[in-house]
Length: 150
Ligand SMILES: [Zn+2]
Image 1 (tube, protein in one colour):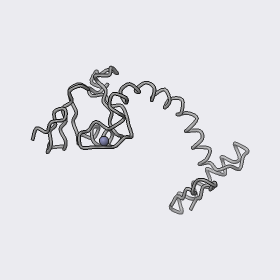
Image 2 (cartoon, helix red, strand yellow):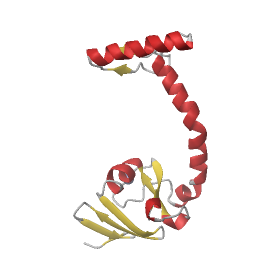
Image 3 (tube, protein in one colour):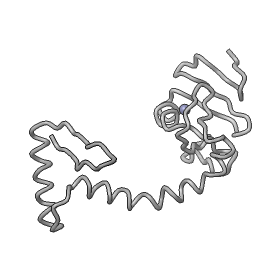
């Protein structure tokens, strides 16, 4: 079992690994220590690298969609969801020619976005002002804007 370095304000991170994976992990850490010349945790290095790489992108990303999030009140627009972890969704997928204009964008939570819409459990069509929702692979609920149709 690996254990991260606890701080005064954060609990330690515990990972359960098989013996084989743990041995592999130790090999990677030893190589990291030899190459980097430091004794800090490889997972701390990975977290800091991930953070420093993606933070500028995430800050620009939030700015890019701020007007969409504001319009949608930072709330998932799925009519049966109340989550607030906002992600931008292209109503007409970019792969199908959809653009970044506000009318083609809707705020969804990460679960509705990735697990529902992009896995075919929910269909959303129309424009941001007049959304149509079909919930379920074989729709059990259809909603036009905020009106339930069935
Ligand atoms: Zn949602």
